[in-house]
Amino acid sequence: MKTMNGLAICFVSALIGVSLSISSPALAQSLPPTVKQNVQTAPKPVKTIGMEEYLKVVENPGSALIIDVREPQEYAAGHVPGAINIPRGVIESQIWGHVGSVEKADLDRRIVLQCQSGKRATLAAQTLGELGFTQTSAVIMNLDDWKQSGNPFVK
Image (cartoon, rainbow, N blue to C red; front, side):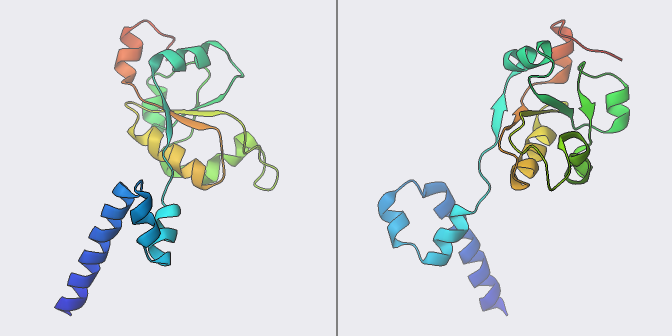
């Protein structure tokens, strides 16, 4: 049993090392097919935007679907105008009411996800990417900084 655990730890360590250094073509060619497949299907990076680009989106209603992924009580305490509230924990089931049915969803619609700091938004963007959405981005900023800068915010 100890040997199996040790092998599992070695395999996980190898996968982590491979995913970090896959940019080496020589290394990529020498990998077993199953490892190559696991690396290729790893989550793709999430597109992120900062406060300045987010302000442009907020100032142009209709340019994107803005989703605040914080919890309902956080959203009720104040939010960016035009943002709808879909908590990160339920985004997979509630997104469809805003983009069309599962069968007829606009997977290319621009979606900007925002939270307090960017962590939940990044996870939500990754989830939407896994569902097939192609134009998602996460806002990386502190919402308190947004408010203190005098940007649009409603309660």
